[in-house]
Length: 392
Ligand code: PLP
Image 1 (cartoon, protein in one colour):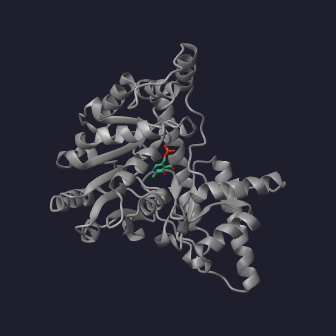
Image 2 (cartoon, protein in one colour):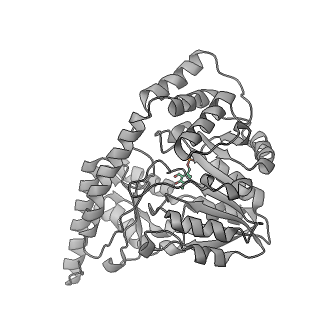
Image 3 (cartoon, helix red, strand yellow):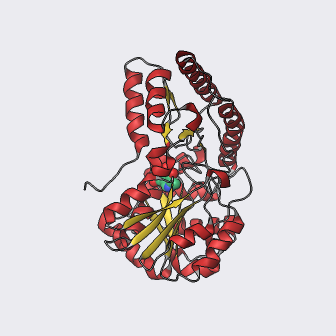
């Protein structure tokens, strides 16, 4: 159990809430969830399902109309055709990740994961007994990886390669030509299964999201992770899905039967409404994130000692703070305690996150302006106290 890590976002959230209860004003930019309510027609579908008596267990892999809706949605978004038998509905995006890593990880094997990346990858890899191998993401490449560099990490012991685009925590989007080169190179490594975490796939501001499902040569060894949490502001409903290779889906379903049995029935009906109903609420949300991104990136770049790449997707900014003279964790805790702004240290996402902070801009423009103002004033005070000026 000591191998298991955690998600610092929940710890910082607890500290920020404690400070708020003590009367402090805190601007909270640490948690990665849309600040919008679930659209009304989706809530109504969940409520109706309860009123209609959908109170029992469902099929372990999910109700048929929901899996069919997922298949239709994948066709609409990516132009791909998959069988509903390959879809496994699970309680949140995380579950597909947990199942895939536990399925492939064991002592003596290696699993490659993005660094900085979603912390649960590395945590569960260690828990499984496998060795985590970091795939570095480069600020100079818009927080993409280099295909050649990733391919060079593969050894005969590599079982699973985890990809995440658009990415948490960097907002990075991997360009199509980089994916093309990676997929071409993977032909030489047929023992490697790929887990593609595309949970932010609908939140892209620069270029387009290219789903790994559009590469037919990967179909028999690609696990797609997607879900409703971010796209439809449904983090608390706990609803996600995996599309599994034919040879693996029965194993994944058996893991579901051994753990949660099925996803709560009303949430599944709400999920159908989300995919088949009007998409305008989701589009409006993405438009709001785009507007906030247009504010926060230049605003962060104006802070002394801070440099921030323009994130192509998701709702995170990942500024380089090396010029402030503080390490990431010190800056995270001092900004929370002294400036009243909750952010996350880049090191919460792996060792290559040193020198960065993560801001979630899924918050109102006013909150973002207040946060940047407070940080600017705080940095100014440090410079004055130190009798120096940091470079702009
Ligand atoms: N994958 C990534 C990259 C995420 O950032 C998150 C949530 O923050 C998840 C998966 C998990 O999503 P869910 O809340 O649906 O389990």
